Image 1 (tube, one colour):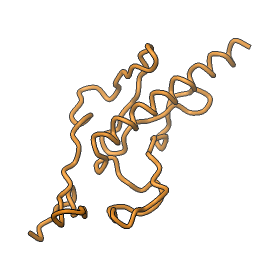
Image 2 (cartoon, rainbow, N blue to C red):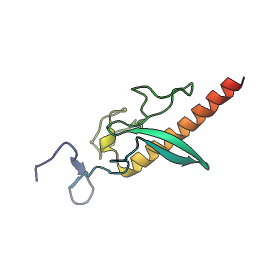
Image 3 (tube, rainbow, N blue to C red):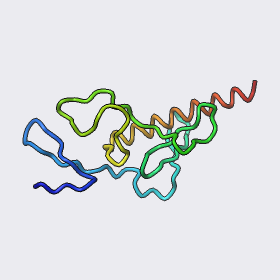
Length: 124
């Protein structure tokens, strides 16, 4: 059919033509905007914005600002996947569940490192 809403779109496949994208729902509707993620046995908090995804601490370990979101890089555009352009323009609402999990885990790892560096700097 030719009916597409803003949350779905055609995706080419090698077998049967067009497959419709169904947005991931993990991390949707969470009651808290902060989730705890296990990073090497330590629980690390990650703030998640429902529209833009996970936030990362600033380099100095201070709380994230209004534009400190972690996005997965999209450096290469395959001729088979024309769903997004190069760069960081893929919106959180269009991430697959795997991309969302990876993005939140990477944000947690970044937050852990930045928090540890801030503690080391303050001890000096």
